[in-house]
Length: 369
Ligand code: IPM
Ligand code: MG
Image (cartoon, rainbow, N blue to C red):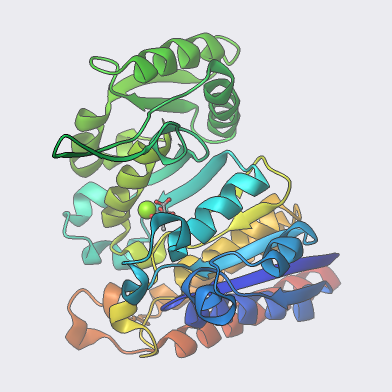
């Protein structure tokens, strides 16, 4: 298999974690006989500094020319004062919109060996395995009109929460299909007791759900959902949500895994799929070789699974990550208490790559018998 992957390391810890993800992809290429061609481009703050814009044309062109895109993170505090359209985040949002990927998949899985890293009790989080399906192109993030006004001495700002039935339907179908391949449950999140968009959301999801009789559907208000995620995370299989609710709930759900650094994501349904860890640019630890690269590495596994249908390779990366965690390797965010952190970003990446090479070797030996 030959894959062209556009790399967008971005800002903060983005370049460090992306480097480890490509190390693991290179190990896949060598051990499973694939060819991955990387094309690295600037995005976010890095692109503002280099080209004066958060999403240069050359970056956009490289993205559209690729089979998949792997992004690190965007955001730099020193650029926070720029007007909204010029901020690093605008680069990512414009890219998402241009690509057209409307479903953002965020698996939230508690790895047994680090279940004590969560501030929640291990008995609560152990075995939790949720797929957050976040609608990514609608709602408050993109709704028009939006803006700020100053009139008659009143300074105000407004955004529009808007969804069409078609936008809800396409992401709902994807969530039901995913649930059918998992444990057969969809929990749909809304605020239908207050918002019209949520009422349309609930009606549409209910109607679409009738086409998937094997999947059980429940509706939850977003506030109650936020609580249930912390008290009974195991009750969830697929969590279907609109854009802003999904942004918030996925960071909250990360607490179940012990660290935001563990979460991977895939944005699918558009022209080219986009993969990125859920954590941000973490400027406070950028350049210290202490960021957790597992979210980026697990995003690379998702890339192989969804874009390239390389299910075995994706599983083997996940198994390598488990093995390295089982062996006790910890960056500070998954150390429980930072005094027991015993590894760096680059070391953890190498350990996963080594574990993967060993798994691949074992499989080949097995096939040779
Ligand atoms: C995420 C991030 C982004 C979002 C930011 C960086 C624009 O928080 O992917 O969750 O809000 O979608
Ligand atoms: Mg977020």
